[in-house]
Length: 102
Image 1 (cartoon, helix red, strand yellow):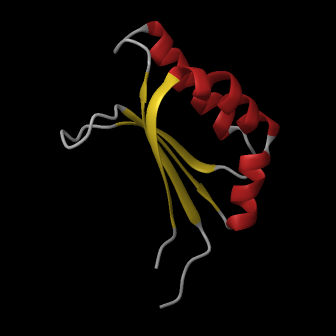
Image 2: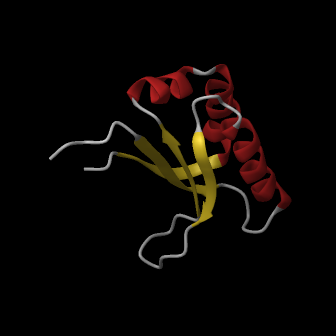
C-alpha cells in the first residue's frame, strides 16, 4: 500500500473559558488568524465537536504537504508563541492526532 506524504494534523480540545464567553470566541479567532497565516499550513479549519462520546468542545484541523512542511509549522515563531502564550494557559485538555492517507 503506497502512502501519501500529506499530513492531516488535528487537535481536539476543551478550553478553560466558560462556554459562549467572549474569551472562548477570541481564542478560536486568534488561533485561526495566527496559525492559518503560517506559510506551510493548508486547509485550516476551526471545528465544533458534536459527539456525545467525549467532552472536548472544539477542534483545529490543518494539512501539510509533507513532513518537512509539518516541521516548519511546529518550529515557526507564530506557532511557538501561540502555544506558549495562549494554548498552555487557556486549554484545559486536548488530544492531538496526525494522519496520513493510506
